[in-house]
Image 1 (tube, rainbow, N blue to C red):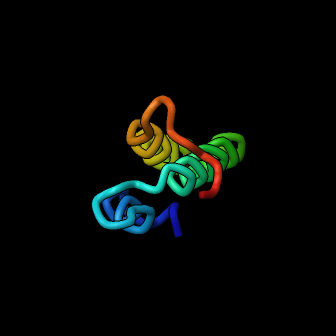
Image 2 (image 1 turned 90 degrees about the vertical axis):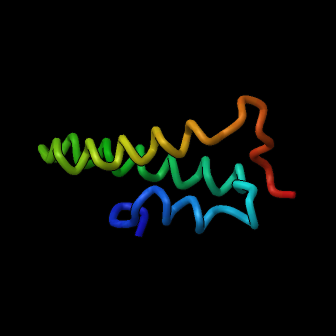
Length: 71
C-alpha cells in the first residue's frame, strides 16, 4: 500500500489528529527504503526512485529525538 499511496495519504494514515505518530512514520519510511533497495537491485530504477523519495519525505517529518518506542 505504501508503494502506491501518495505521501500525503501516508501522512494522513500515520497521523493522529494533527500529530505524526513517530513510530509509524519511521516504520513506513524504513519499509519504503527497503522497497526502494529491492527495486534498485532488481533493475527498476524508476520504482526505486519513487520509494526512495517517499521514504525521504517521511524521514524528514521526524524530529531528531522522536520517541520510537510504543507508548
